[in-house]
Length: 275
Image 1 (cartoon, rainbow, N blue to C red):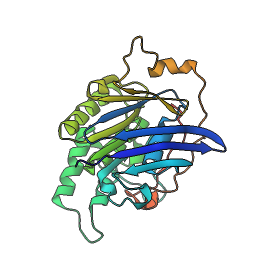
Image 2 (image 1 turned 60 degrees about the vertical axis):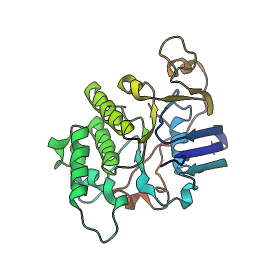
Image 3 (image 1 turned 45 degrees about the horizontal axis):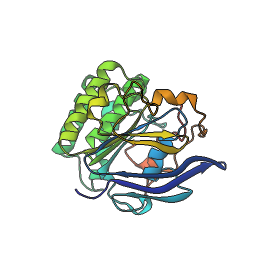
């Protein structure tokens, strides 16, 4: 696929009259691995949500594979990993069921689960080291393990582009290395990755481009900032005041349909960043 995965032009977002994104121009091309870096409250998660149409722009434009999010229909091409999994009431979902819900966008309403679906789910569980927990209720898992479930759900969908909001937050070093190895294989296969991170850690070798967000603006766009001596690096940004982002609130829906009907369970997203 040669078309641009994401294209935002003069993207602006305000909450309660306070600007959070201030004129973002960002294009993500197929095969890139883009890390969005910056301090808490700098606008990273809001930018991700705005790229996907989950947070509406107050000005500017964003396109997903050439279409505005509200008119984009091929959502199977996007695998989204939010910051947190929240399962609604009712019958407790198992880990396997949540991961299998990542296949829904690829299925027609009448098609039964296929061998390819089952194989994709099994491979995704193995990739995040949760094969032995497949039948456990997802509520019984730790926060870090639930983050791995979210990653596995995205992997199971076999999308063209992965969008991950702090995928390594709350997971141990071994799982971070496992994720890095998994993403390396996806990148070799031509997949596109956009991820939010405070520190790259084991993911650093696969990052092709670093975009530092500071006070809602792009402060650096190019080679990933080095850990030493780069004033654009995320660790430096604590010295700068930044625009506050709102507290956690429910998502109104995944683009084109309610989240309660997308991938099997309701989600709660974050417009702000607590990490």
